[in-house]
Image (cartoon, rainbow, N blue to C red; front, side, top):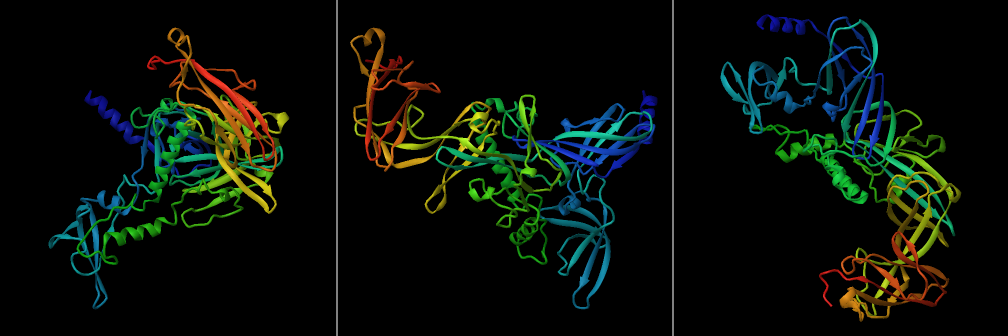
Length: 561
């Protein structure tokens, strides 16, 4: 066994290390769940024997377990991800026990002297070194001092690196591909709708961002829309940094959690002391406090740490170039049709491919158009919905505000017919004085042929008044046997506009009262919409309309009549 171990050690000692400084090309597929699949193509010249391939400059947020190498024609023996940042703090910590040179300058005569020393300790309380005169603390001599290092520690790297050990094989040049998942990438969709009488011009923009410290040059960029099942990164060693995705009941809850995690990532980028540790001393020359030192680091980080444009600002999607403010490195907006992202089908998902290779630099945000659809047919109306998850009337005399609703069907014959990823949609319309902002709303994923409906505001001159008591279910003569009860509802819709309008009344679920729900004795026959009972009424200009019905069902067991 000793002889075998010696042979194994000798074999490892004979292995050659080949370092690939940079990729020939790179492809980035960004998912909405704040990560990306990075694929790098690199040319390497492999020897015949075993070799350790070192890929320098990989993305710093790489998930080591996800790394896969292809086209080496060799068996993979081992994979390692090495990245401890080369920073002043890490350099001091990793140089403990090493020889350094201390340079001291006498201000009175301007003469500098050098002293050989050994670094003993480095922490927030200061830096201690040993010279022939004994142990001393840095910056405690009362004169300017600086440390010089003879060499960098082997385990510190200016850029992150992935090393893969390969078995023996045929020698020669190979164009290998290494793929891995990396955290810190994001994309989202935003839409602009310019409304006309019965149509809108719809445009869509993709905002994509690289929140990592890696700059990807000439990258082929793809974006994937769809809901993936992901495990939690902390508890299950999965890919999601904001929890196991199947635990989120709806897309809205998932998106809210995703947005919260993205905000945390921005806050991390915005905190200037992330990669900074202040090493104290007796006389911190050039600064008077830790606050000043951190402020200095902040001023440096302001040059290379960015943030997304405000997603709630309508003008964010209308920039032609650049961005106001100093926190964002660069926002590149391309709006020409030839520069639009191209949609492709990808199994159960949708993929959007940027038409040209682009630089996706560290802490950079880009925007690109992916949709231009003029003349999409829309249905504009006003609506009120009665349900336990909506605002509910308190009783007789209560007045309900009506929402401004925009609806359309995602089909080709109506001018659309494109799968739309979820995002914020902002609506504009023409007025006598020009174009005005009409409101915005969140739009969920919209597959082809599916209906879509959004609310963009409330009408101040259109109201629905409840004219009958609506406090609690009224038992009928057979309630003790059937446990069925009813609630009457008489509505008066008042229109103060100088034009007729269409108002939609919807009756939704009342699970907290009824185990099932039915509508009877309606003054107008209802239709069904997304499980609700629905009525469409045309209310004349400066006039009113009425609707009455009874809603009821089987009472829940806890109700006692």
